[in-house]
Structure formats: C-alpha cells, structure tokens
Amino acid sequence: MRIGLSYDLKETITPPQASCDDICEEYDSLETVELIATSLEAEGHAVTMLGGGREFLSKILQEKVDFVFNIAEGRGTYRGREAQVPSILEMLNMPYSGSDPQCLAVCLDKPLTKKLVALEGVSTPTWRVINDRRELHEINRCRSLFPAIIKPAYEGSSKGIRLTSLVEDAKQANEVIECLLDKYRQPVMMERIILGDEVTVGIIGNSPPKVLGVMRILPRQRNDCFLYTLEVKRNYLELVDYECPAGLEEKVLERIQTASLKAFEALGCRDFARVDFRISAGGVPYFLEINPLPGLGTHSDLVIMADKLGWTHRQLIGAVLNAALERYPQCVCV
Ligand SMILES: Nc1ncnc2c1ncn2[C@@H]1O[C@H](COP(=O)(O)OP(=O)(O)O)[C@@H](O)[C@H]1O
Ligand SMILES: [Mg+2]
Image (cartoon, rainbow, N blue to C red; front, side, top):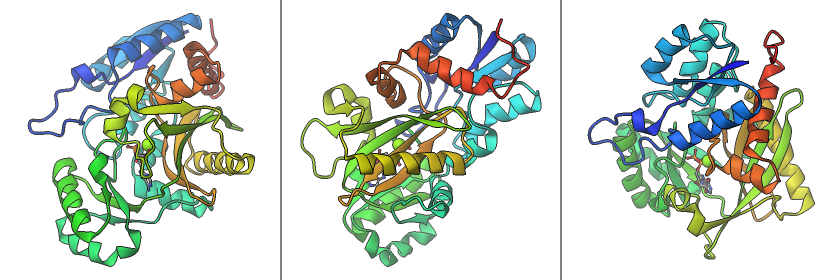
C-alpha cells in the first residue's frame, strides 16, 4: 500500500519571538519520523513523506497515497490543533490512522476531558480553571486544592510543567499562574496533587481496545513529591526508571486497566492512546490526562513500554496500522 506519513518536524517550526523554550516540545524529530517510515516499510508499504502545515496541504493533493499514517501535532497554540490534519483528511475522504478530529480536539483540553471521564465514574483530581488575570482572586477560594499543581489547560509533553509547578499556598499559586497565563496565552489549571505512584497505560485496537501494558515511572532518587516534569522528561535516562509490567497489587492494576479503557471509550479514541494516572495511597487511580496521539519515537513512553514487553517498534506500528485498516476495507494491502 502507498502510505503517506504526516508529521510536524521540530526543525521546520519557526517559534514566534519571545516564546517559551518548550514551544516545540510536542513536535517530532527527523529520527522519529524516519524510524516510523522504516517500520512501515518493513511491513511492506511504500512511504511518502507528507510533512505538516502548508507542505502537507500541497503534498496531500499532489502525491498518490492510499492511506495516511498521522502523527502531526498541528500548528499554533489552538486547543484543536491536533485535529487539523485529520480534518483535512476527512474532507478529502482519505483513510488515516488514529483518532478523529473531535476526539483529538477534546483531549487536548484537559479540563473538558476530565469532566467527560468523571461522568464515566473515573476518579480525577479536583481542579479549578483560571481563565485570565481577572480570575486570579478566585485562587483564594480554592484552599482545599493545596498542595496543588499548576499547568496550562491545553498542552501536552509536560509543556509548562516544571519543578516550580507544585505550589503549597495561594501566594505561590498566584505567582505561577500569572506566569503561565502570560507565557502560554491560554487558561491555566490548578489541580490537587496526588502524591502516589505515577503510571502510564498503553492502549491499542478497537472493538474492543486492549491494554498493551501499565508502566510505572519511578524517580531514581527517592522523592516524596516526584513530578514527571519537563526537566525530568528531557533527562529521563538519568532521572527515572521505567517498570513494565508495573509492580503494583493485582487489584490496583485491574482498577487502572478498567479506568483506562473507560476513558478511551468515553472519549471516542481509536487505534491507540496513552493514559496517565497517579495512584493514591489507598490504591485509587486518579486520571490526569489521555494522549490520543502519543509519541512514537524511541524516547516516547509508549515505545519504551512496548520494548519492555518485548515488542519491536515495527510490531507496535504494525498493530496501530492494522487497527486503523480494519475501518477501511477498501484499503487492501498489496
Ligand atoms: N494532579 C496531579 N498530581 C500529581 N502529579 C501530577 C498531577 N498533574 C500532573 N502531574 C505531574 O505532571 C506530569 C505531567 O502532567 P500531565 O497532566 O500528564 O501533562 P502532560 O500532558 O504535559 O503530560 C504528570 O505525569 C505528573 O507527574
Ligand atoms: Mg502526561
């Protein structure tokens, strides 16, 4: 099959002047794109690089492809940015991998996603959104949230989540929120901290989706309030150990798997996703967020998890592709 690969390369994005140093964090490296292309080729497909943004717009109209494997994160700081490429593909009636625009747009909005999963009975830490500076005084009414974490409402890849994001009181919260409102130009969340184990869950497939694995992320240095911040993600080889399967009690693992699948299905995810939780001292998984477009590079959590479970990168990409192809019987593999 002729597969187009849509992606946004870090190198091709020109950040606006005076932007934050993590503005390009979600975008992919050439190494990741080449790795995915190699895995698709190893599955017997011819791969055409489509890129992202304007390059994607012209190439998708020019190149002859039967299907698009999409990892494009989208452009700008819009909360619907991950929906940009899939929306165009739907307009062209072009088969593609991964979740649809509606799911991708919802899941980048963390507060909205939390409301939807909470409706399904999945626990999520209590939170409050501060939309702009005029709402800063609301912090005083949120004392029950402390200690809290402050994070941008529409980001991923730990953008805006630093060691300084953990706040103990209204004064600290005020400072961090003001700073994030200015830098990220979007609403900010203040969320109660869950100081337990950090796990991430991989899901693959549809009807029914299946849990690939539950991976625990352990700080190398004992740390009572470990946060998987940007600093940690950038230096993960030195700072954390990954444990998969996670060494948690069977009943806790079952709760995590049930909550993950509920979230995946409630949000209408397709083909694959990664769900992040913190586990309370009582063994309750607290949903933090879901990534319907998780990273697929060597350094990404889902790839590390698959590797720990004995899967090759090619097998992982093949599983995502096959899940997507089941939707499109017209895409016959030749
Ligand atoms: N409520 C919380 N309690 C404890 N840790 C949190 C909480 N929210 C975020 N974190 C920490 O910050 C990390 C990144 O937050 P997350 O919501 O997953 O954002 P991102 O989309 O950037 O990955 C988490 O993996 C976790 O370590
Ligand atoms: Mg996360």
